[in-house]
Image (cartoon, rainbow, N blue to C red; front, side):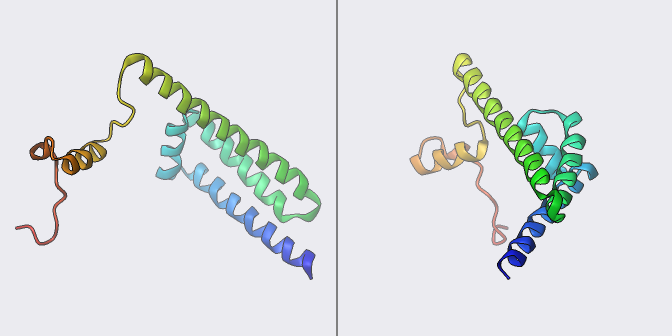
Length: 131
């Protein structure tokens, strides 16, 4: 009974990786943006998607589960390393150029409204009650 529950959970995780891999191969907007943020480039997206599908299917087959898990672990660790490297290089470049790290206008607007400094320049979101 315990091993059947573990296998069901393992298969569910495998199917989630298959779905994520299919989204990468299909070019879903979320996945395209993810690879832009990570900095790996769009050429690596189909490769990662294919590896995720293979690893996810491996998790669904008991004899291949160890190999599927190992493949997915390498893929996840590699993408995590790429993300950390990207963040570190971006932070270092911002530090060297003197650019602020938070460049989103939304964060700037919220800060200016809270402090009362430059509140007239802040963009206030419109509500349905505004005419």
